[in-house]
Length: 199
Image (tube, rainbow, N blue to C red; front, side, top):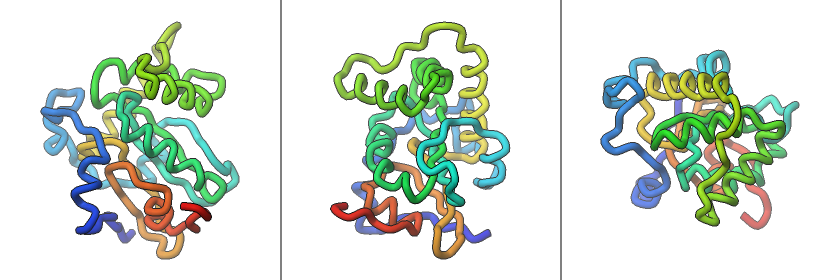
């Protein structure tokens, strides 16, 4: 399958600031992510191994996967800029632990919520208000294990930052992979979707 790495020279400086990475960048095994990455990015592997929550049209034939960390402000930005596109595709948000221990508990709490999308909205509102985000309370052992498995897959792919977006370009059918947040119009163009009016 063809892969498109979405990048434009004119946007490099901006996009470099639109992602969070761990410094020094290490996986949960303590190895640098670049060394940990040994598997090509694969939509089939994500669909089979990763677990997240779906936002958007459940009946859509298009699926976009987003690896995110609950502590990452750029993930929060993408959460907002992706919303105008949810009528055209479904987004599967996959929580990982990249930045700190809080990420794992909050990712687990979002997965455990009765309505994970509403929990994510609540979490991002709390983060924007600088009140710390959603609380990780109760027995979240199963969900924490999911976040750990998601993180292992993220590391195997050799991703260095979040958000990490993986999807299929609607017109060409090529896989697109991008690390970092994007404005709605640029995200739509990358995925081959219609740009919503006003964007």
